[in-house]
Image 1 (tube, rainbow, N blue to C red):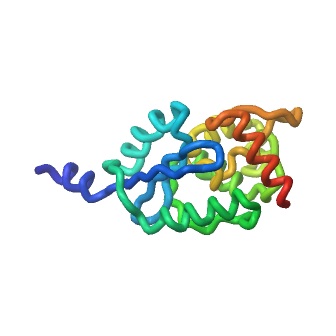
Image 2: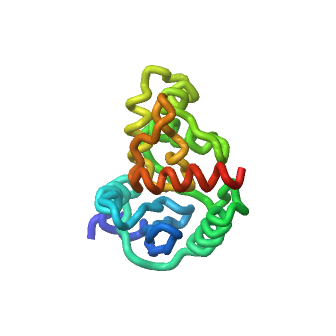
Length: 178
């Protein structure tokens, strides 16, 4: 057995399906935290799982994680308007630019929105709004890393992996409980 095989077997991402108010989501966790939260009725899971395996040099299997209970509790509180800041540990991996873009997402206050241009300016790259949109599209942790809070420059809804109906739902939920 090669060292590479041993390494990949020692890195595991466990997954679990969680039922949300608007469908099911697949959650994934490493030993460090949540690394995936995607809607199961879109093609995003099929897109993200191979990327997770590659980025984390890990095997993916269904299983249990102590982070899943915290995630479920926090999501339940979020959907009832009692939680505005998630504390469940996250384990994210991406390019330096993606990490900057995702960090900017985490800084958008609950109940507020920003345009892709405003997000690009927040990372000191005002001309990179299309690259920011691409980084947001590659966000693997929906809701918690709140790419749903990013809208078009004209104020309209634009792009969301979970669908515009869910994006609108999440924005309205937060505005209602702000």
